[in-house]
Length: 252
Ligand SMILES: [Zn+2]
Image 1 (tube, rainbow, N blue to C red):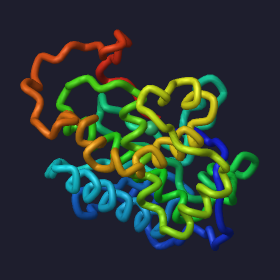
Image 2: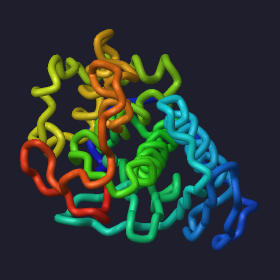
Image 3: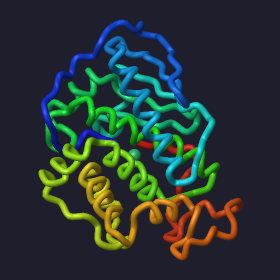
């Protein structure tokens, strides 16, 4: 995920103290490492909540994972092509890395995600996004799914994790309409404005003909007709459009 435009409410954004800078804490299905000098108890609490939300999201789709999700809270992330990352999932080491809340707020100061001042709920939603990338990676067990569909899943989980009123405020302020058809979901929007893409996916998901059945279709648990697909192992390493997806690729 990248710092892009989206909206919200001003809140107290102080990161609480009381937790050492290198502490590793277990929380439910997760393990959170506070490797950031700016991270504290607030970061730990938000990361743990995000893990729980992500696990429950996947469970609701039929995936229950006992594998611990690892979240590392850091002061900074790489800036590929000059784009500031807020979080990333590295499948090679099965590790999520996210900025601390304090660094997240600083990174978003000039270009707030969803167009509004970032706050704790928004921050947590970005962690949820990465948690779902991690859990999806585990659930797929090497099976290849198009990048945009993985982002679709992560953004639906991210937006669903927000309080209802905030999510609706954010959608209204964005002024965007959702993708109407699956074929409309395209990489141009994603790369140009990833959070806008996320809202458009979420609105597509909310259409009555889509919903969780569409998410399960992405994950390969059901087809449009509700049947389990005939095979999971040995699927080709390219999707129907022939776009290669290298296993082990970083997800932002
Ligand atoms: Zn993503």
